[in-house]
Length: 183
Ligand SMILES: [Cu+2]
Ligand SMILES: [Zn+2]
Image (cartoon, rainbow, N blue to C red; front, side, top):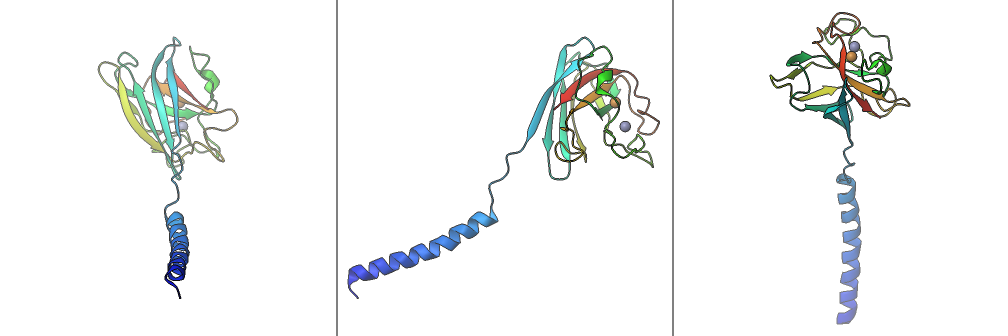
């Protein structure tokens, strides 16, 4: 074999080796799916924006941050829930957001033996200045069957009082004081 022929043969062998090695590496580390983050403004009963929600959707649960500026809420605990319709346009009462997301007639309440419904979430705490920085999780998904981004969307509703996580239909959380559309 001439020297040139040897080099060509080595080159070919190298290419054959590199092919499967690259393919294997690709299979082991697929490009990560772009994390889906949904952001939406939170509106109060006057129609003013007081903060925002940011939701990241995972394979088995979602994680939501609730950020509200000073003066946004009354200090103390507030019940928050996913309501069934993504409509916060009736700012005085937010009744267009309807009841809690609930596809299987579960009882309301994270601590209820026959609950929770799919809209139930832990309470958030507003500081003395009315601001909130909270992160909560839910097994309700953002997309897919029964997800929050269904045909009519959903809403995050914040209530005047805390949710006791047990009594029907909303844990005694009282009036709807803020709302964010999830679509
Ligand atoms: Cu609610
Ligand atoms: Zn509920």
